[in-house]
Length: 130
Image (cartoon, rainbow, N blue to C red; front, side):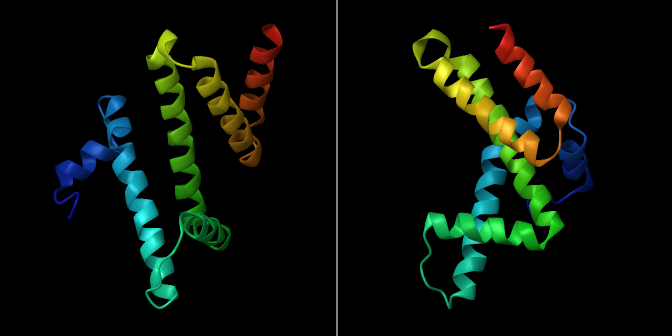
């Protein structure tokens, strides 16, 4: 098991360092996508599946099961946060504006879908001040 002891589970559930969870995000994201791909392939008798089919399968499962929706939204929010961190880390070397603004656009859609109107207001206020 990935989290074989109670201490390992506690370490993940109650992180003492905010970067703890961020460092595990790629592994968690890969695990969710791989699990969805295996489940979809199994439902098609072991046939190969494309990335688009896996994505659509994950969306369909999210519509059917609230827990799947929660996991999907959480992984997307974590991905958006990672994009923002990468934009800050890249700095002048890359297209910060493009990466950061893309992350902001994704975040606004996610906030709208989850009815986080206060976050939406913050985004619009920030855009108007520029």
